[in-house]
Image (tube, rainbow, N blue to C red; front, side, top):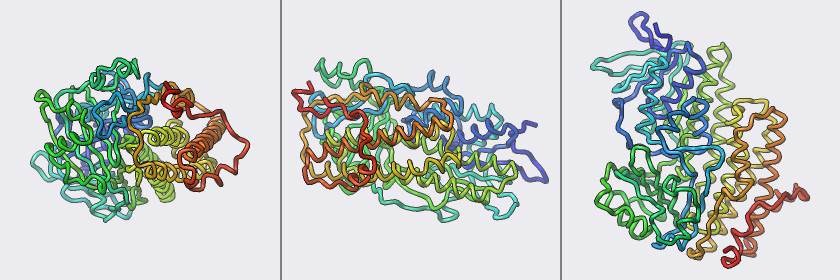
Length: 553
């Protein structure tokens, strides 16, 4: 008998772990569990038939460092990513609201690949690969299976799942149940765990058969060469404006994924909730994008919208041996592509809990601690988006915000995952002061940038600056350092250096904001930075980014 296949005893099938949902979160969790515990029997119950079509009707196609590392190195899928997906030229931002001449506007991105890779995922292609890999590794993957009842045990007795598969009603007993069913939220609905947040944004998205080459959007040779040798089309492109952004993501199957994400108060969903309305909206807000996409050869493949997509959850890990992962638990915002990051973090905590349970440990305290940590990551990351959409179109403030948000990510959260320390409670205890200071600095910085961007309500969109992050040495070093193998002492020391860099950057941004708006509030930054006076580092903001345009040129 294959040790990973659910087995029969007394008429009922049994498994160590049943995963409800065979999408990105569920299949990667199944692979991670089997890698860590080869004798663990894992069953995945998935509603859709496999294989699914490529360019599948799902968002979450862009990865950033944590998620990319999880897929490539933790799960060992790098060969597939390199051969079958699109290596991306980072996240790219255009400040082009209502402007046709993209070459006249500012742009932020990289001219060369940063050291730590990431990819654009054709979700259909990737999930088909994951399904095949899961079966090869002994996962009992039941596609075209519909969960009908779910009984969760609060004792040592197994949980019970009844589902329809291949024309029959089947019953499965399992020690663990993990809900990876996405927005269906099977456990969330059953237990009333849904929890709203105050980040009120909506999204519409669609795919076209074909890809628009952004480098051809202008004949200006200087603009075309602005970020060479990078190809703009291979970035996760953000066309930004007040209260919104529009994405363009290329897929390996040849499609282009497109979507509008916007503050519900500034851009009501009703203005874009059909394809024709969305194109009309683009004609107004991104006229060059509209012209590039409004071509008969681009066949529309699908269209979907989602109101108030961001949500939290009251509980994701239980001492009673159930868990939620992926969107079945919580979801933030797609602006910085964190979806696969949070899948990686949550799946890893689930694996830790299951491993401790199999070792005979009492998991109750760990379930509480891991949930507290996971919710802390969620709450801190949510601050990057909530109430910040009004400044998304500001061509001077947003590049600073992007730079700050990257530093916050590269300094604290990403190194924790890369170094496999996210569940190391002794290290986390030692890092608690750094995370507390980082949180305080970030809250103050988000408030500062929000005031700056909203008070300067009519910025000059035609400065045509090129914010090339690859040319910033410390960006390359922080990004490349994510893969360093460090002992605990070196890891703590690097975290302290990263905190010093965050203070330095905060100090420089505060000075810039005061130069622009002399009476701007400090939002607590003066007090936070005064604790470390005399520890100034080398300047972090490239001077030419903020010099008068004639000097910068």
